[in-house]
Image (cartoon, rainbow, N blue to C red; front, side, top):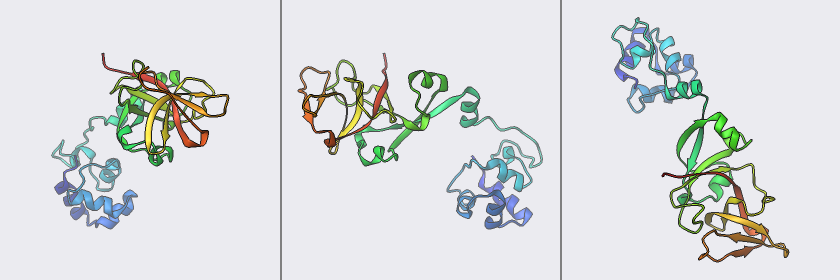
Length: 220
């Protein structure tokens, strides 16, 4: 957390305005203004800000008292993830729907989860940017998918050549995870694993496939 008083003091000592500091760091004046005014307390550019202010990141965040003292910051989450080769995957909330938001590549992000790159590559060849996590909703896919289960969706797999695979899809405004099967008539069967939920049939242009479910995880 950047101490705004220290940031402002170093700027005064060096005669730097917000605009000039922003120019030298290579970020917007608004970003510097938020730090100076306390509206923001962190910045991915803290190293460069400290360099321009002729001090250290440790001083700006209050870890040391001497602005000249060279002290190392604790590694950030991003640094640790890079060292462990962990990949950040967006988790979206199916409660918000999978319609225009997700299918237009702008998912409603709830959080990010980090996973080992090797584990993801064992599940799918898709790049991390084409993967999203979501949670199962309801009981229509029991016993395969329980309410609250975490599913990994591969958005590069949108054709249902693999019959009966699990797909995330939209039907009108409804978002769901179902099995799909092509009928001889050319229509598509939407199947639930719960035997009490009847199958449905739609024309191909009535659904939009978001991606295939390549992993299901749950708490024991």
